[in-house]
Length: 71
Image 1 (cartoon, helix red, strand yellow):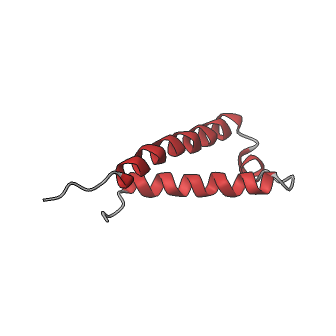
Image 2 (cartoon, one colour; image 1 turned 120 degrees about the vertical axis):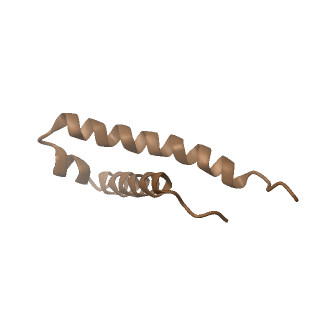
C-alpha cells in the first residue's frame, strides 16, 4: 500500500470534520456553524471544501481498489 500524500491527508481530515459535524447536527449542534457562523463566506468555503474532499476520496478509493498490475 502506498503512503498517503499531503492532499490525501487534507481530504481525510476535512471528511472527518464534516462527518463529525453531521453527527452533531443530528443532536442539534452545528459545530462548524457555531465556530464560523459570524463569517458566512468562510462557512460556505468550509462546506465546499468538505464536498470537494468527498469527491476526491471517491476517486482515490477507486484508484486504491483497482487491481494491482502483476509484474
